[in-house]
Figure 1 (cartoon, rainbow, N blue to C red):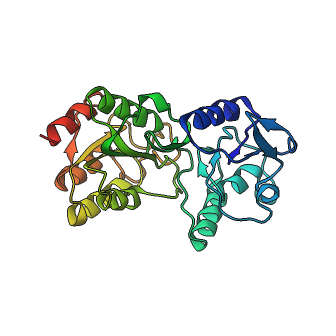
Figure 2 (cartoon, rainbow, N blue to C red; figure 1 turned 180 degrees about the horizontal axis):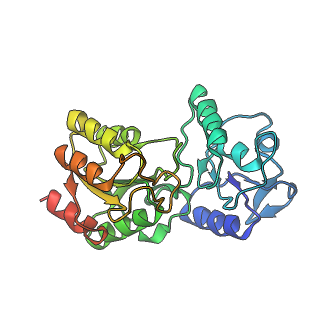
Length: 278
C-alpha cells in the first residue's frame, strides 16, 4: 500500500514502485476513497482497505508536516503500516508508533528514509531503481542521498547489491544499524556491507561494538558531517552533536577500531569496498 497516492509525489513513486515489480495492492488518501490510480484502488484510510487495523507492507510518502491535532494525525497513523519515508513526525508520536509496532511484531523502516530495495525483486520507497543491480553487497545508511551515491558507485564498479536499507536520520527510528547488520551477517546472499552514518547520537558506536563482537563479513564505512561545528544540526533531526558527544571523529575512530574499512570521502565508498574485497 502507499499513502498520499493521489498527490504528485505519491503518484510518481507509486508508479515507479509498480513498474519495478512491486505489488501495489491499494493506495490511501483521505477524501479520495473510491477513486483509482494506475488501476490501484484508493481508500480513505488503511482501516477501510484492510477491514480492521493490521500491519500491511506499505510506503508513506507524505512530505510536509500536518497541523497538530489532539489525536494522532494522518501521517502518524500511516507509519503504523509503513516503510516510512515520512518526515517531520513529532518525536512523541514516533515513540508511540515504534512501541505500537514492536508490541505487534511488525518491522518499521524509517521514518525520514528512502525505504528498502532488493534489486530486481522489490522496492518500497523513493530510491531510483535503475541505479541498482542485483549482487552481494548490503547497504545501510542514515543518509538517503548518500545511499544512492554509494549504490551508483558500487554498480559502476560491477558490484551489485543484495538489499539496500535506508534507516533514516530521525532521533526515533525503527530498524537501526545493529538490526540490519545482524540480518546481513546471516544472509547467504550478502558478501560485504556498506555502512553510512552521520553525526549525532551513538548508533555508529553501537554498530562498532556489535561488529567487533559478531560481524563475519567485511564492512566499509563513511561518516557524514565531518566538518560540522558542535551544536549545529546538519540536515537531519538526529544529526546534531550535543554535549560534545556524537562527533564524526568519535564515530570514525570507533568503527575503524572495530575493523571497518573507512572511506576517506563519499566519492571513495565504492573503491574502498573494491579494495576491502581484494
